[in-house]
Length: 127
Ligand SMILES: [Zn+2]
Image (cartoon, rainbow, N blue to C red):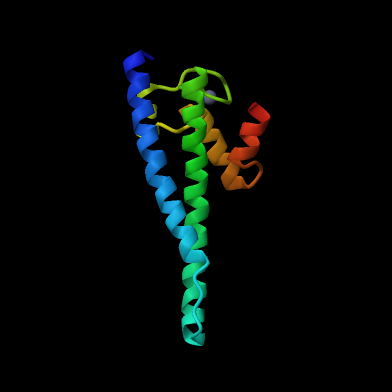
C-alpha cells in the first residue's frame, strides 16, 4: 500500500467516524426521551427499542472505524487481523474499516451464522 492510499483511507475513515459519532450521539438523545402520555409511552418504547438496536449496530461500526484508524497510526492497517495477509485494496476500498481479509471474513460470517463463534471472539482469538 502506498502512502497516498493510506492517506486516502485515513481521510475516508475520519469522515466516517465523524458521521457515525454524530448519529450515535443523536440516537442516545432519543433513547432517554420521556413522555407523560401513556399512548406516547408505548410508541416511544417501540421507537426506543428500534433506536437502541440501530445504536448497537452503529456503535459496532464506530468501534471498527476507530480500530482501523488506530491501525493506520500504528502502521498495521491493511493487514488481516486473523491470518496477517494483506487485505486487497479492492476490499479496503469497499469496506475501509474491515479488520479481516475476504477469506477470513467469509469464515467469520459462516461461523456467526452457525452461532459457534462471533466475529469478536474470532478477533480476540486472533489477537
Ligand atoms: Zn485473513
